[in-house]
Length: 414
Image 1 (cartoon, rainbow, N blue to C red):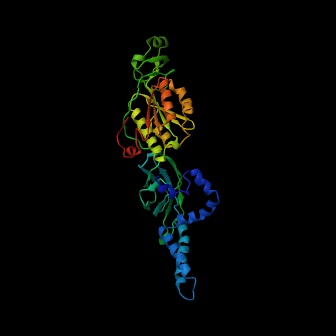
Image 2 (image 1 turned 90 degrees about the vertical axis):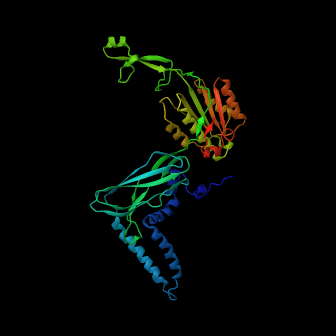
Image 3 (image 1 turned 90 degrees about the horizontal axis):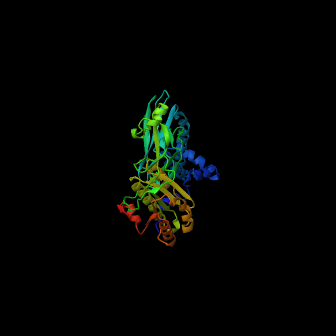
């Protein structure tokens, strides 16, 4: 069993914003709030001197035997002076705008850009950007972020690079911006940004080949908004001509009758339609295998949408989550957004799984199942799908694809 020390280091810190907010309004938040304010107003030098202040204070309790208490008083005076002068270093007239990408892949760099605009009549110096405590899977790629000089009337940009190694929805607490006060022990009053929200998407497994039954199937009523590819189409009506419409679709009789150009509108009713089913029963595998299965599903989707097919992503857990993409109906990013937030689901049961899939099988050419195990319930589902005249291909983690192959991004031919 592999121990995830990164998670253990954050075991007492909630992963979600809701959990952290619950702590803030509780008794722990009431205790930690003053400490948090002191921490933000103190520079790293001051934090070191505070430790020295406690040590000197302990040795200086006996004032008759030594003069160490004088050093303690001097340090106390420095702290009091720093607390007094910090109020003169407020960032008056400074506004902050934060920009970042709404999504990033696991292990890729996420740049958080701060645009600081100084609308005041005076310059500001030695600005520091203090970031929040990141979740267990995140880290700052640059240890120091700040700005030496923000002239009056100017706008400067500061980039704070981050990296995250686990997929999912991420909420970061606000960043704080402040100017360093005289003596170098405190920061002036801080400006607080809004919190950050973004998705960390799974990386794609390198799927290079996937052999499937690609026959076309009738789609009753057609597929609205799907792009046309020259297959059999059904006439659904007439509409006014729009620039860019094919000339061959012009209806001359209707044009002569109405005096305005009119085109025939068709709807395609036969498609090659595939379905990707993701098994989320974590009881059948460990967490590493589960995460690799999600990467394999993402790689299969990326491989399939390159072709001229419709792909239904179906995630089987406690309920069915469905998304259709391909043929101009959806983008791969939408599917990755869904895969980014997948959580382990209910135990895999053949009867329940078939009850979820059965209403959709009549339109499908083939089904791809990314399975976490090779056992009797999963084989029964595969056999039942084939019995209903639909092709089926199971990709079993550990048998067809290994976690190591996915991690090394090896070419996967299925």
